[in-house]
Structure formats: structure tokens, C-alpha cells
Image (tube, rainbow, N blue to C red):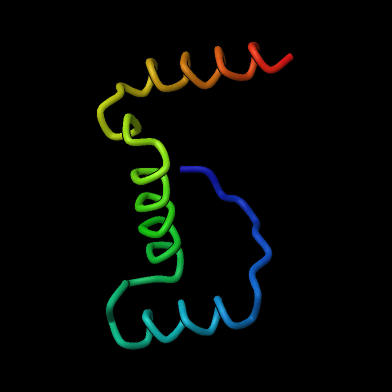
Length: 67
């Protein structure tokens, strides 16, 4: 895994911290990973069905077509 830095509104961070404090998620990072997985799954239905290499190739192709 890679470490990234994000800026969140205080309200979002407070909500994530409450979920962590209640034991819903073991860490804030895990809550954010789950939220991203849900987002990617709904936005990119093919995300879960693609192999990592196929997904990278699709992203690269999409970026090249934009230029």
C-alpha cells in the first residue's frame, strides 16, 4: 500500500472518528479505504472484475485518448 495525504472537512473526519471509536472500523484508514472501494465499485462497475494489469492498461488508454 501507498501512503497519501488528503484534506477533509472537519465534519467528515469527525464522522470517521466516531465510526472508529464505536469499533465499526478498526482505523480511520480502513474506513476511508472502504468508502473508496464502495465509490469505485459503483462508479466503475468493471473495477472489481478486472485484473490489476488490465485495469492499469484501461486507465492508461483512457488517459492517452484524452490528450
